[in-house]
Length: 375
Image: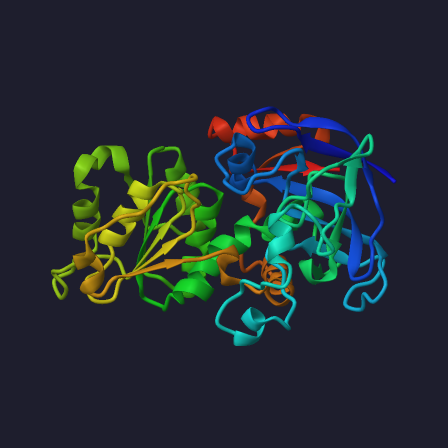
């Protein structure tokens, strides 16, 4: 069948909105009509050419919501008409990683997903008879897409597609990093570096967890009211502290009873390796946990003095906020629908597929939190 899609033809070039061909689902697969998709920094990371796993030509997009329109043989967990969110981190519930209960990083289809193809090694997308790559197992920058059954989460039918599509990445990543990865407890002190879409969701995750002190760090003063809207208690513009940012943050967290200072938990949402080091080093001696969420460019490395780790600080990484997609995503949609978390304010722009490149421009200009394409 034909479907409209935004095609990434090569690194560094604007997406081309065109008609591509989509083959129907095979055994264990489902076809989804995408109703809305967010434009995420990870899409830009790949489109820029900085992603070492980036493949072209490809249909990008991994933050979507839609309706199942067809299922392949053997599919039992979803049916035609179900509302779903595609999962770039699937949950097969059978591989060693899923069974371990120690990680959300299902390995069932990791190899083929990284090669831009379906689990059987082939692509469902083509144009003029030439193969197109899938992206992160999702390819939501198309009105219709095909995914493995284990890579869709069934959600409630009254949830608005143009809002809950954001749960497919940004919301879950930020909130999950707090609840699943860091396991923040009530009364904690935390620092969040980078107040974009992920950082704001970390902040509202910290509020949910009951953190007392939530410090937001950014280079843009315009982010201060955004952070406060979601639960931030203090704001620091990193440019104002110069080379003393770490010392400044440590001093902010000192109390008469604790003159050592430092945050219980810190979160890097920037992808900047220098910031990752700062985030670790402003965490508390003896028990500070620093979580890396941002993705750095190809070949970049993190560094710190071993002393920082020997004295009890912990560096942790998280993917998809440690969430198990088919299990946790429906719960987060429920939280939104029940008013426990906010999504609407972060959807700052909506647009048709034909304007998708404008969404990337808004991101570059720092004018959007999240742009959403509505089909």
